[in-house]
Length: 187
Image 1 (cartoon, rainbow, N blue to C red):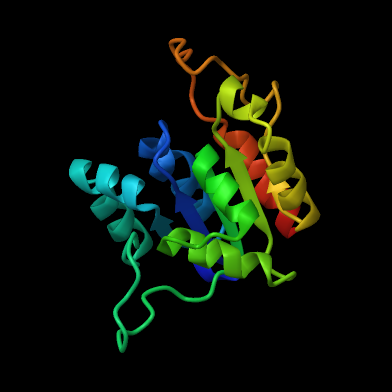
Image 2: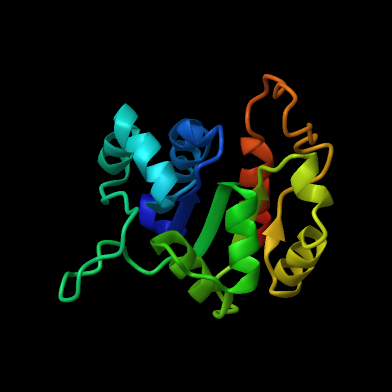
């Protein structure tokens, strides 16, 4: 299957642990499934992945620049329009801002616009801890995103929550569950 047969997948990575596996966990499998992939990172994730050279590896692999900042007026758009978005891993900050419509970085601007286009599915894996989940506003954010049609990848079978100051159990991000949600959202 050639890359453009499935359309363009907008992949958004945020500054959560595990974003360093974005290429092997999500981008390479998406390319193998026929997606053309355009990667956008939040500013923190961009800083992390640029420092390790991973942003350059992603750009070479996808053939598109990795975005983590808005373009200047008059500059050409570096990515084609996405047919679907996957946000993984998504910090509690990104989830909250997306639910509230706050678009204070390039990644959130793209995602906020996608929520206004019913034909563009959005899949989100919130990588949070128990304190985030207990915050009084959290459930409202999740409800808002569900009502907007967002496909959430969450639950104890997907990502068991841990305490904010407890050592994080050594586990891989649930990339198979994220890919399954992508397939479900786009089939």
